[in-house]
Length: 375
Image (cartoon, rainbow, N blue to C red; front, side, top):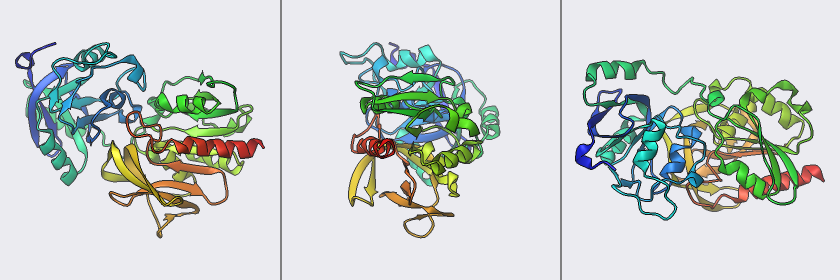
């Protein structure tokens, strides 16, 4: 492990010209992406390997990161997907019986750019007031004017289809844990490993399909009981072909359950609109009200877009959908359901990883829809 004094200097440069100095750890290269902040206190490895962070530089607001190292069991995909990682202080030495190495070694091994000794509080406050923006993490000797030019030429998140390249790109199967009750197709727009695992724990054989399998002839795919639409990165409006197939499946009364990007795609499948949030929702402490149950759950979230609401309780331009969950921070739509078809979705991550388990009931709710169809 390198001592702090041995780390080379680096800086984070935002597209508005604001600069934050620090020290390099991980890969000592230049990295570009949209900078967002995450409020989780733990779970940094799950965050790094969440495909929804493709194209983003993640700032951790908790001041000490890396204290329990890394472990293969905590990976949500085979390798980190974030473009860069920004922390106030990286732990000098991990301390956990589960650790197979340090966070710094992990970033180095996978070529992920990191920067530490950054004033992450000031950076987070700046993003909250000015909005998420493009940025670069650069070595100290990179000319600032040239780096700023590259930042401003980097494509913005709006209009960017990152979902088609975020997943594994191949079909694979997750067997049920125990006796098979249902066969579920899961569309991999960047699915986290925990989602198919939880479906398997409910007795589902899960066939995970790449986005290219979202074709009009999907209904002839074979016998399946329902469809899970995963999380993923980028702009939902840029994901070609998905909404038409999802609507066709829904009208055939196939149960659909979407999370995160899947929630946005279901909203758009029935005429809804999506829009970019100022700085998104990223973290494991977001309170959401379940309007049907009149309860509050603490949720894990990672998204930069949302479904637009119309009149209270309705989805704009989608009269067949109703709002089922609402974010108690900013009032945005966090869940929706079809008024007559077996379709529902939530904006957040019920599988957590990392985060609270308040929302695991949604997987059982999906099982109830599958049971109704099979019966």
